[in-house]
Amino acid sequence: MKHPSSVSAAFHRRVGQRSPYPLATPSWVMPGTYAENLDFLADKTDIAAVELLFFIYDETVAAELKADWERILQYRERFLYTAHLPERLEDHHEKLIEQLAPLVEHFVVHPPAGEKEQETLAQRLLTWEERYTSRRGYRFIIENTQPGRLEGMVEKLPGWGLCLDTGHLQLAGEDLAMFLSIYGNQIQEIHLHRALPPGLVPPDRLADHHPLHEGDPWFTPLLPFLFPRKDPLPPSPAQNRGFSSPIENGPGGYPSFSHAGKRPLINFEVFSWPEVAQSLGVWKKWCTDFCAKEHIHEV
Image (cartoon, rainbow, N blue to C red; front, top):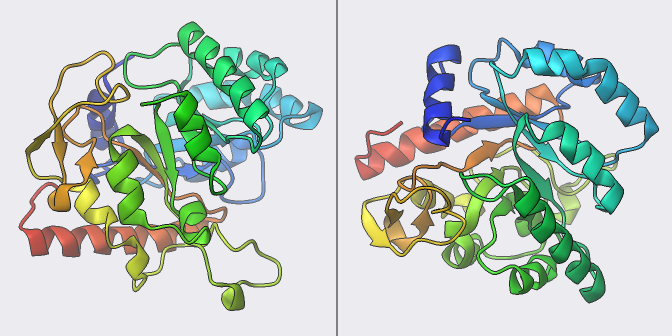
């Protein structure tokens, strides 16, 4: 497969996307099957990638995947694919991984809670990473979920590729700037969504996976991280697997993937198209305003 920077450039030509970062949505932005959602997203020219969701993988989901598989393959020239693996990852899920491996860029994994479970997952990921290796970063990336779980996995898998989930981080009351300063040069994907304070959460919704809001100051450190200046930073294993481009810092000293040859995927992880569209509008304004302020022309 192509180097991610080439993949991103190809999407820019194909669907007119002009974001310096490839933009993604989940495979569920409307009620329907994988195929129905892909059909719906096909003409949304800002969206270059789709995260195939397998939070639960049972007989029903397996049957839906089988029924939609040919349609999913038909869209591989339109979309970059990633996959979100089941919440409780087991050895038998390797059958799903085998099917998806030729198609997806990487797999997102939720870490478990217990020490024993984390050690089991770490050994499983080491085996699978070798079996389904990629030259463009880690094939299996670990997402921050509840406090302490990511830290436990990072101790067992130092330097491993990560997925930053902003809603989970915000919900846990953690500091975004601190997270970026510690883990920034390991991030391969960003799940970009917002968590609401308890009094504002609708009764039929979770506290997170809400669309971006223009005036939320919690996200302020994200733009300096994503739009870097050229300050050398020692490479991490996640960034320089298979290529030797220099790693650089963003404004404020945050490490960034942008000049490492691979840009992190930005995934608006909300589950309705109106909320994706709202997030997209806020994202564009943030990028435009920040780049104008910092005299950055790469937008």
